Image 1 (cartoon, rainbow, N blue to C red):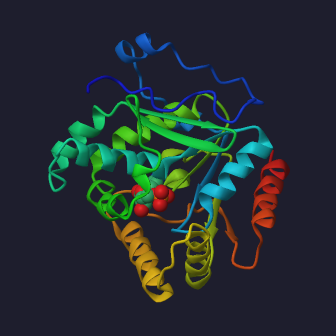
Image 2 (cartoon, rainbow, N blue to C red):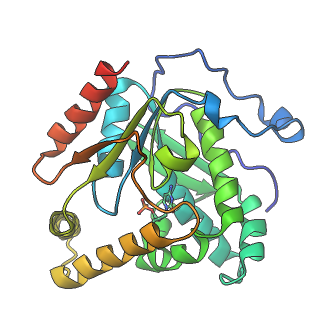
Length: 262
Ligand code: DC
């Protein structure tokens, strides 16, 4: 399938408080006269970065809800790109092929009432992008500059439309360097593994805690050591260690930070 994707539904998370930023141009005009959004002008962003399992997406989504901001899960975009590349039989070791196929991805994401849906064309891949296979293969794509460049453009386009809480690995460092609020969400490795195991247990999946810990450590190392857009704390980010915090305390800490610094 070819065509400029309609990346993310603009109507996420209900009311948007700040309408200063122009709404997206109609789909048909976006492609012809499309200009990459200027990242230095995108400021109404809560940029949340951090390692695997620090709670970025659950906390970020709730923060967005409380602030009336849109929510953008950029990890889901890398997952969708991986699914799409595999689906199309792309050579996962060929950066040029991966870049070309990613540019053709008809990705559409909606986030309503706290429920993220990821679509490729008409196909709902929300569940399919969470499989261990996708998590394993994502590293074939996430260090490819052309893939990142395309997804970053979509992310900025989204962030330029409305105040947004965006979570990922390079939100504060690369995608939204001028974000007014930057948070580096962290927690100890043991705590992150314990939380992930508890989440899986709730779904009836029993895991070996030592193996899970090792897997999380390995994923973090890959994200932190890659040459392109590695995970690191932006110099102006506030670090929030959620190890001793409940979910609500972590949410409140970010909401307070945004309100104080507004
Ligand atoms: O947040 P997540 O686990 O769903 O992200 C999946 C992978 O995507 C993660 O292992 C690293 C990559 N990723 C990235 O490189 N940059 C982002 N902004 C978000 C995710």
